[in-house]
Structure formats: structure tokens, C-alpha cells
Image (tube, rainbow, N blue to C red; front, side, top):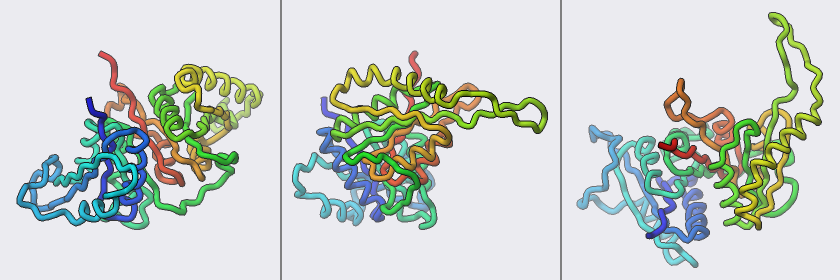
Length: 300
């Protein structure tokens, strides 16, 4: 059985061509085929959100022609398939995830406003696709903080110490193994801790921050143990850090190969697919590509 493809969504923009290069490398590392997809939007069609293959009589697609010129004949090139589809990209792109192992696209497409940090298509794909989605940012995003400090290839993953996502950790370890990279595991804990004793009155409880950090780190190490056993060659360093998880992940994205975050699970009172505030903030501000990993479907 052939491997599921890595899908690169392209529209001719500079952002999408950077995503194409990232997807090409990812397909090589996975020994997977690459599928390059251009979704062409035609306002005259009444059912613009339906996934439809381009009609046989359609003329050549200039975007795909440019991509062919860019990657054909490259060293170690995987098998490549080029597909033109018609529809609304924000609706069509997430549907591609049902047959891919990875969907890759740029932060902004050709039709987006230059001031947007993340285009609507990237947001829709990261929120709705059934497979992990990698969003590749433009170069030059500034971050604050020390990042990874230690030189060398590095993958970053965020962990909730109170509710870890095993799918996110599994993806992060596998990606670090593919890239021969160190895995930087960030577990943030709320600090300072505040309680309310009376209306409008905040009381700082007597809490030992070192104890909270140690407990967070111990819980995180426990979550990492089974993944370490499956990937003994991956060095995983856990860090328990106070405060804003998104801020720590964005800072760590500087010079990282990839930042891995999870998408929210559906809850009883919020059945629609959604992304948490941390994931959205990382997508908006990270300097490195960001992988958004969907939760596993519920067991029957």
C-alpha cells in the first residue's frame, strides 16, 4: 500500500512557494509522494465550495506550470502529482486532509491583505483538516526571548501538564526523529497564582513557585516516558516555565525547525471544531513553521 501524500497548497504567492519547498523536503524525509494542489476560485460557479477537478478542456494552469519548472529535475525528488481544483480555497483545502498525511501551506495567499499575519485559508485548514497542517510563515518575523539557546536542529512542542495530548507528542517525537533534531518540550504553568477572597479583592496565596515548577516538570517527564522509549535516539528536554504558554512557544520558535501545537478537542457544549488561544497566537507570531495536530477521532 502506497504512503499517503504530503500535500502542498500553492497559489503562486511567495508564501506558498516557501511552503512548497518545505513540503518537498517533508516528502523526501517521509519517503512519501508530493501532491501539489492549486485551488482556483471562480465566482461565476454557484457551488464554489464543492471540490471539483478541473475540466479537461481547461487551459494549462500557470501556477502549476511555475511549480513544475521550480522542482522538476531536482536531486532526490519524490514522485510529484499536480492537481488543479475549483472552489473556495477555505472550504476545499481542509477537505484535502482526509487523504493526506500532512497538508502544508503558506501564512498568506495571493488574495490576502499584506497586513494579515495569517490568511483565512491557513486558519481554516489548521482548524478543520483531518491531518496535521503545517503553516510556513514569511521570513523575518521577530521574536522576543532566548528561544532554544543551544545550537543545532530543534523541534519545539507545547504540553499541557494537566491534560497532555498524546497525538501532539507522538507527532513531535516523530518529526524530531526525521530531522535528527533535539526536542524542546515546553510546559507552562500559571504564575503568579491569584485567588479572590472578596468582591474586587485579590489575595496572593502562599505558594512555593519552585514546588509548582518541580511538579509540572515531573508530570511532563511522565508523559514523555513512553514516547522516549519509542524514539530512543531523540533527545527530549523538558522545561517548566511560568506564565504565558504562547509567549514561551513563540520565543522558542526562533531558529527552530518546527513548533508543534495541538488543536482543541470538541467538547459537549462546543461541538464545532475550534483552535485554542495558544495555538492561534503561535500561528500568528511564530518565526518558524507551525504544525497544528488534530485530536484523534473518538473511539467507538
